[in-house]
Image (cartoon, rainbow, N blue to C red; front, side, top):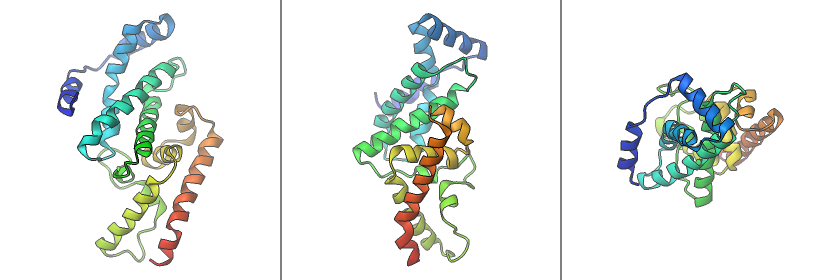
Length: 213
């Protein structure tokens, strides 16, 4: 399937009413109804597209990312507990992003700029780079600023996939650590550990660079 065909299929998707979705989860989880499972996967396919587009990679890579993200979506549908009260979209998006990140890391595809994605749609005022580097003093020229940001992007791209996932959740998506831990099926102590490790790695990778800045 090419991207144009995929987008055409996405446009056919209609939103489910809350009661309809609850019924589908009950039928799939409680009765093993596979048609309900299929409908849920189709209904949430836009989450995959949104996750893939935020990485801003070259177009030939996008469909591979969408395929990997769809695997993450399917895994989320399989493992989601609809009785716990956690929104499926919150639970699924980290699994989708994790699959995509693992794919990019596995294939050695580093030409992506997820670190520059806004924390919220339409708002680019709070990104991970803002929390890692103080750009107020000493970075007055746009060229210098852009070069500095490129170093941060490269450092982010060298992090292990789980650390990237946690830093994205905490800094880009502004998720509370306890919510992130629940959505990723991790303990909150594990989330904090991955967060600290990721920040420490990035600072270590940038330390020599910053000394000469």
